[in-house]
Image (cartoon, rainbow, N blue to C red):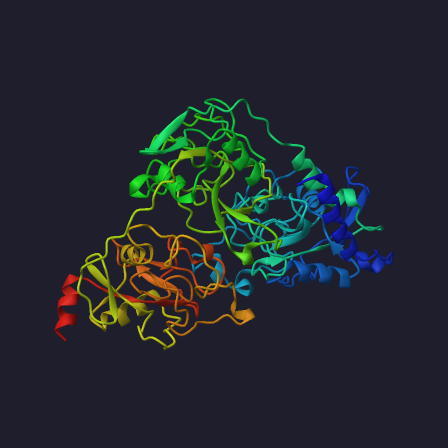
Length: 585
């Protein structure tokens, strides 16, 4: 994005800000921050999260526009990202506000969710009162900047409105800090008008309106940090199929050289075209990373620390992590930098600008945790706008024919009329009680779901059976195919507060697999049981809430067995022994 564009966008912020009143009472419960690096030289920031009252729970479930309006009504404004981070880091640059190293239980973060997933959280249950954790404060006396609620600020690294800082009560400890790096990850989505369960805010105040330079500061500093790459090595390739090749390393495909980053999708596409190549499709990228065994990581299903450039301090030189090699012989597919792919995604709800064109990214970067640095992403929104630049997003090129998708071989298993064949088993066509046009049962615990299936001479589907039904042998991304199709399933991002609720089975006639198994994507999360240990449950498929990667088949949440919610349901399966009894009836 050009600086001229940043200026135009920044003006939108200025028009939205009211003139700052001079009455002293507006500074009640505010901390003065003296910082010569800022154009104003000093500013005030709320001591606590809004409504800025000690020992009261802060306001959760906020959208950016609501936060902006609330601060204006209080005679203040939202803080810029740089103001927020300076107040959090303090005068000594302490990464966690209270100190340089993470301290467990000092702030409200890294809380284990009973649901196993943040889309089913209850903010009122987990929030601490403002100032309740007496040591969760900066040297200057600002409380709860880390954890509790992530906080809206005016701007992000793209020079566009809105970002979230500081992490929430559930945020992984390495992400909940003062640096802002997590909310500036390319797969982090923050639509401006969407209420976020875990989002709050605090306000800032200056004697004058925030300056244009102050709002554009983050984007300007990021643009000045564009990387430079050496000459591209075209011939350093790995063959995936008869006429399909992929670069061994991230661009510029040179052993011992750091990958190029801060490049837009369009620039990445052009650089590949200039070499008579192309950006890789997501499927062939994932195959090159995981092989035909569909591993989580290039080297297997169990994470090995330091095998790849994950949880590092910066991008690594290509080939520096010798263990980060895939079954195909491709290196550094996870970690170091995220990678653009050629695959677009039509997901209006993930756009911060309606004109954005979204493209999928893969592999994670040096910054991410092991559950983000995967060959096949299992959660979140691994997409970015084509014009965006990120300091940990690069690419690699492919050449030749796009790798063909594997074909599904239909099962020949005989099933009861209301079940469908999957391998050697059968699965209910609809969510329990498996009746078209009827509202499925919701709010069961894991044990209740198991008991209800057993009462029908069936069993609660194992995770393996459920995955096979949803993905098929060709490993579909969604139950209906490999490309996200908005409005096909009930996954449009409604929370209960916004009127979200379960729909009758079959209400979305196209939300089905090729075998006519309905609603595996969206509607209700579905209980499944572990293949090996039937006492362990996992939730699959996502619900009507937009979270959980748009209801991809691969999404999984390790919920506690006693957890229950109106967003949960299940369906039953039958193995060979059970089928014998069912078919005799």
